[in-house]
Length: 174
Image (tube, rainbow, N blue to C red; front, side):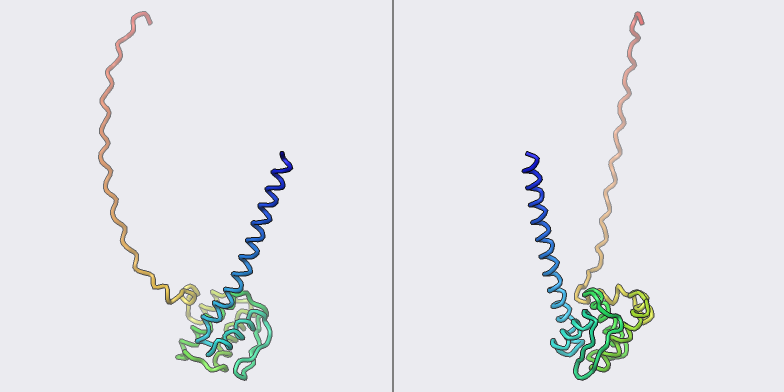
């Protein structure tokens, strides 16, 4: 009986592990595609965005429109690629550059990555550029409505007092 329980438990764990691993692989593929779509306007084309995301992810040299990029940080995770490109985009935007050329894009990305390679955290890099990291990373499409004021709770009714218990008459004999 115990052997059957162990076998059933191990089978269930194997199924859960397989589902978890499959979820990780699909999430990674979706992240890359989502990043490519998100940064296509910044890079100028979908092909340039794919090269940019893959180059930063792999930490290898890559070329966009004849401009060679050499990431100073080495390999980055997809989340780090997103942060780096968001900060670079915001930095270029403050300079009035919304559709950067390849050299302008390189300078924006390298200014962020050089600080990261020097050991600064993402929040510190954002602050040095005059931003708050949360504001840069917030999705502009996520227009959050103003918070609705909470309704006031009604007052609790006054609890009725218990009537006093009549005193027990003394028991004779005690």
